[in-house]
Image (cartoon, rainbow over all chains, first blue to last red; front, side):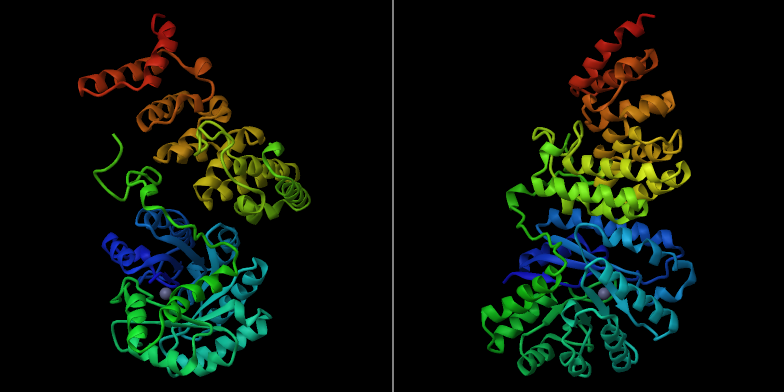
Length: 289
Length: 205
Ligand SMILES: [Zn+2]
């Protein structure tokens, strides 16, 4: 099983996670820019975070045989914080970089005017930089947030196949299935969405435009949920090719629209265990003499 | 450099230079994207990280900055150079450092050298010790930069102006470094020996 986890926040995960993911078949990931669980106090805090997404984290992932991409955006929650407003003006510098495969996560958190303004502006930026868009749907008032997100996407003039609407469930799947956008499902170790419900959705809706991710971050989450969904698909009678389509070919097709995927395989022998990034090695004690 | 690019890359670079010449602000997004659109890779296969020689994308980025400089006043140019460095990944930072000697910035870019020399990224340390540093960096910081090269393994062929700027104080520092290595039973890097030889005339002053 080869897996592309299209939504995972590796900055919050350990090297044990990288090893377990590789063992489970994960060979590529996309890490969307999001919030850190606590508010950032300034725009500059975002820039350091973006720098780590295009630099240190990519380097760290490669040491474990995993290709790392990212999406860049001002997230909906912090779009409400005036201290972070300058980020929107600086985003173009990051959206131009190699390995940045979409604008995201954009969308709604509490459905405020500030969120909508940042969302609309970032949809424009996606058009200007020829990038797909990753849309986060809110945990509260999800149906209304999803509906409004689809309206804004339609009004933006972006082609629906350039947009992935994420964190869907049984209640929101119909809205998005009819829109032409890609459908993202985050599989959690709690009641939000699990792999068996996911398999039922795949059985009901087919595999077209279907994307499955772990959305693992700093909260209670499981970076192996993609692999576990693949296993549940096989147990439910889906073929190996079906699993490959959902867990690899679909995310590659979606993010591939950026023209910026870095998918040449990492040769195990070529992974230099003593390589350093800006002088820092992941593997302490094994630095070159 | 154009002989290192294929025809398509060459034509693309000329388009980008024209675009930046007419609208200098476009460099903010064209500079990071340049390797993707023009080409990338070492100009010397023996120097894959571009420590001693510029990589293809470095040369393309320097060309873009020189084009932008024609349309920007000194203060605006300094602001843009600082922003490209601040928001750049290591490849972009390296190209900014390599461009400094071609831009009329006076001392305005010394902060960037300070940043590069504080870190441990050998690509940036190497690029920071070019001709701009020879002319502008205070001698104390410059000597420490050279010593850091010996510590981190940056080849001294990457450092500009050693013969002109090296002095007895640098010789003393390198001598101390070599003595410490010998005390610890470790090899003295060939570059350190070479530098001590070169500077021996100053020591005798
Ligand atoms: Zn997320």
